[in-house]
Length: 194
Ligand SMILES: Cc1cc2nc3c(=O)[nH]c(=O)nc-3n(C[C@H](O)[C@H](O)[C@H](O)COP(=O)(O)O)c2cc1C
Image (cartoon, rainbow, N blue to C red):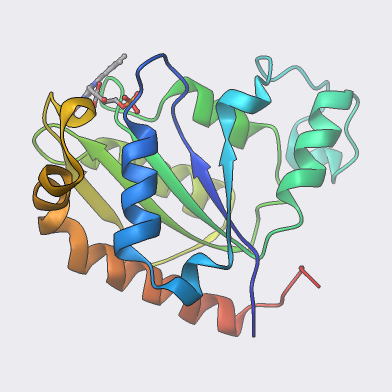
């Protein structure tokens, strides 16, 4: 049974490497069949202001004051599951991603998700840890047990496809496992998409 999955790109700065990681996840980690169920959500295209709703999203129960919040909610609520692709900024999640998450509650809660992070050294383990708390504990999404850290270097944007394959290779099996777990969770969860 086909699912609708959103892959959320967690950085928006000029010269970001996020598209390289996103592309690798879609092309190398996922199978054709899995990839066909994914839509990309690029926060750069959303340009959400800093969270400005009068009610907390948990209290708002999907009824939002501002047009931009309603549009964001309408987009997010249509997916059965989510893949977060986030860098680590100052040992945490980029503000733009945290802000986009903060806007909503019922649109996310109880739904399956997995987390890919990237950074130097540990591959964004602090970002992974913080996202796990935000999504798993606060918003009560159903997270895959396996999450995927990806170690990067300073020349990702200058690297050839072959060099990137080699650089990201150590995360390939973990990534595949996390996606497998995501689809497993999706098969047990109520679908929202038609
Ligand atoms: C504001 C900022 C803070 C950063 N902090 C960390 C960090 O804590 N750990 C880390 O491994 N890399 C850190 N980096 C390096 C990023 O991992 C690297 O720049 C990566 O390319 C960011 O992803 P992006 O290009 O998709 O924005 C930081 C980068 C920025 C811009």
